[in-house]
Image (cartoon, rainbow, N blue to C red; front, side, top):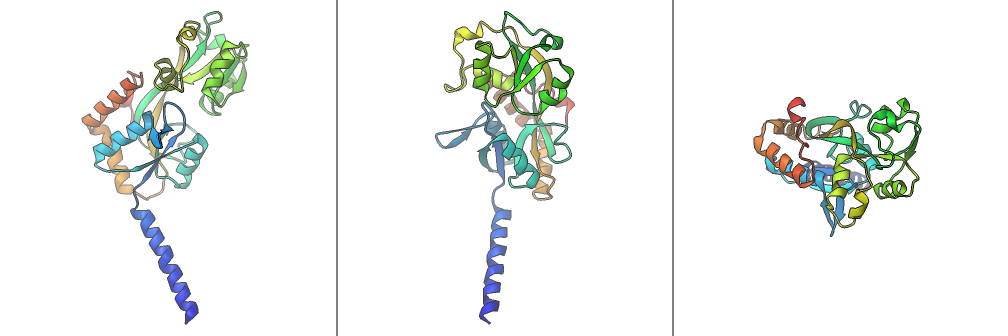
Length: 259
């Protein structure tokens, strides 16, 4: 009898835990990368956090937010450890992550110095080009170039390497570039005089940010409501306000072509 009571108590505890998880507020996992997401005074901050909160307001709900490294965000979406995120669409992810709703489009810039400007793609040949991550630029462009690619994990380091002559160009998305250029955070800034050394950015493709989740059937009704946000003018207007704040006036320019 004691054995059966222990088994019953265990089943009740497991069922209760599952019930609590199912009824708990969904969690957004946001990348820890300025200006997309960071922790400040114990609170999540950043452009993607603001977009997620705008979606919450439009839906009349309140979710939780956690800031995590890029690799963990992607892994947690695939496994369903966390429920939602806002990430770039990518060919590698399309079969593993359900992109519910495009919420923006961000261009990718190639930065170089005025002494050796990159004005077109071919100008990167025979140069040392730094980039972050092992995705978009590494997969789409680097194989077509006669360039030495250098994967750098930190944006600050790419700026320093440029000024010290250790790289000839680096690839950076426009959200990060404008975050530094407009001094959006005191910890992420470049001295004003150093900006005069740069040539005008050479822009590559515009990539789409999407509110994304796993293919799990969990939260099916909420996912359907999220997809419908593309029809809510107030939400789209709030997106535009957020992008203007982060120096990206064209952040919503592609949305009429998407979803």
